[in-house]
Length: 125
Image (cartoon, rainbow, N blue to C red):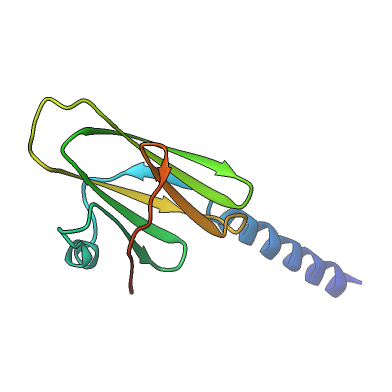
């Protein structure tokens, strides 16, 4: 009986810890990115997605305007909205965001100024 209780407790503890370790949907602008990500950026693409370690994506967006970025969850889609707003400069700026998706999302849709935008996907290890 003691062994059965110990086994059940161990299984319950492992399941609880694995549930806590699951990643949640998140989206943030970043200043520092890994060297492999920097090397994978194509300066000729306005929008690019770089996938690292399965559920981690770097979204690179280049614009002369300031950019307002947001994330929405729509069914199983992680919807990224990138809206260009007036800028005080004419220099091209690079915005880099990190997106982490969870198991309840299987699609990424990126809308630039309200329109779904195709983008190249680069996969790195």
